[in-house]
Image 1 (cartoon, rainbow, N blue to C red):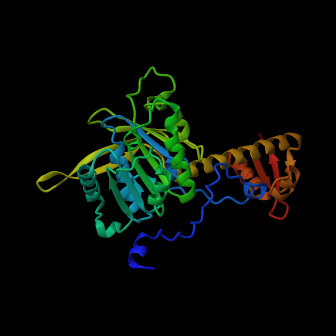
Image 2: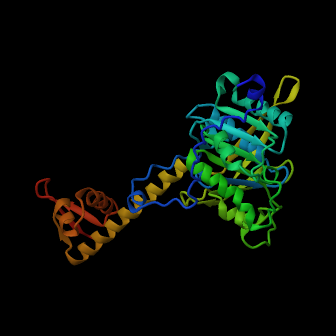
Image 3: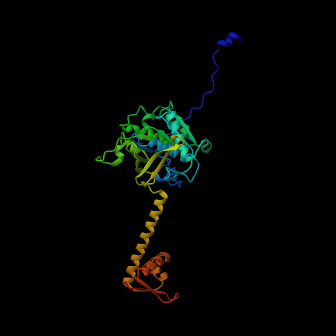
Length: 364
């Protein structure tokens, strides 16, 4: 074939590319998968129910400090220190954090991270690759192919902050129930990657006479609240501490008591605003609450055994030792000994006889 002929020859056909089947939109689990052992929930901040799954929403109006609080939490988690507490209050699991900023811009977001890091005594060498920032990306969450691109972006991170919902999905009407499509997308991505999402959202100033409480201040459709796993509502007057109400805790079902955060400028030399400190007060930690609940359960169990002992003594005022009494009640000897000791201390029961022939008598 001549050179001219080669130039005009039709191109050789390439082997057809393998066509991949689209993912099943309705993936099914059989009974074996449904009843397989479940892994423990991988909480990022257990006290406020922040974990993979449905995204968390932190909603508040201007000056409520929601974004500063999120950035402070990001630094604590990215520090890698397992003893550090978010806002000085909540235990957190160390991990890698990605901040998707659609709202503030590079200068303000970076400056705030630097100020927040100052009182924490954190720098680049302390954070390594555990904190990443994307500012004003050109890809929005409501665009086609966003799901696959966001999944690729967040893989390998434990926490992802999206600031804010409206800026990240500008084409969606927040007053329409369709706005939850973005949150549902983040839920699917979280299920596949293990990344927990915090979505910053705007809120109206709560009305004291408004039915439904603080959660009704969240701006937009009620579908937003429904689509989230955990919801915090931030309320504050300018220059005043921010009150935070935990309105939803889907994973654990345990709502944290209302608490306050204070955002304080930290001076350094001639610079009165060198640092920024976010600190919380008024909320018991989940660990403290668990211990309190365990103590309440122990006290309630002891009172039940004491009531059973009183009924037994009413029928038979003379009883043998703790083991014999436990057998009559169908209980273990340990809780019976404890309850008997309390009744003796209160003067309702007296002990008689020696150790080998110990008896208990009801005296009322």
